[in-house]
Image (cartoon, rainbow, N blue to C red):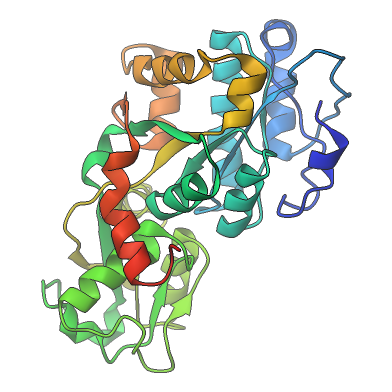
Length: 319
């Protein structure tokens, strides 16, 4: 299923190796069993035959609960395999830095990155190209949230957050750290000057939980996750939205050069065509779009993330 080197690579979620590989043939003969195996992290695999490019190894930054990510990217892997006649394997990783590192080494071929990690990975991997983003990523937002015990009502004044115990998400999250820190600084708030220093929860879901528990009085997270958790009734009433950032470009799929070498020069176009061709009117496509919280996917390019690169350099997160 994969080279021995990849199986030994650091940064993969413990216990996630081996994982099932989705192919058109196996999907037609055993879709249910394979999808169930993907969702539980169980499966078996064998080495690729000589001349076989092996599976297209997809990954994602771990910005939400692992079960949510497994369901989302297991679905993507199955759909890609069926529609493009490829073997596709989803490989969960331990943290944001691992996603960037495994992409750079070629152990991941196609990764769903946030804006900052996508910039980091692209600058570290010659020949990497962004191929698609969601419609909502053209104008993405972060949401500052507070515990109701603070007594704060929704407002545009970020200065009121300065004296609160505050947590970001991952240290290299675009929506959970980079852009909120930028907008805090623009409002005259030192993004590192919170009492005791800022926390880093590791994910958007964890940020909600930490603010709900009172461990932190305030935090910031991805607006799409906030809306999804709010609409599903998963947010503790002790946590309320306080402010919303201006818009910026964010998440996107980044394709590595090694995959193009293995699968052919038309791979990028095929993948972009698949993502942008997903239609809300098709039940199978709609399932993928719903999991991503999107109405559609759009082509994208490196220039869309220039602002993120500049802010990342300014904050010392891009070299």
